Image 1 (cartoon, rainbow, N blue to C red):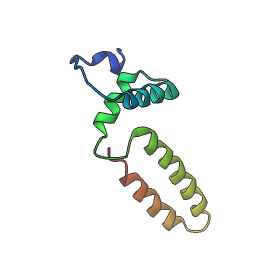
Image 2 (cartoon, helix red, strand yellow):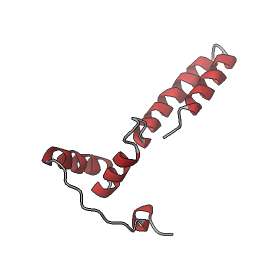
Image 3 (cartoon, rainbow, N blue to C red):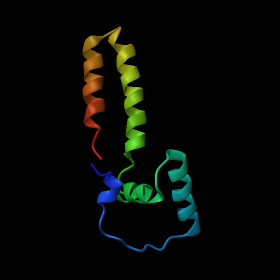
Length: 90
């Protein structure tokens, strides 16, 4: 199966500031991605701050909180887990 990146078929030229280009390059390097993938992610999530990496980090925090809370209140832990799950909207 082809990589998700290889399935893109429309090419557009975009003008941006040097600072934005540097930011995209730096993020791509840090995350081990292509700059194109970073730009697509930023475009797809421009109206919300819930990018996949941030949501993954949030989910890790939520999982840890649920685990700790379950020792004291299983009901509250289940409620917290449901609320965290409802935030998985990109």
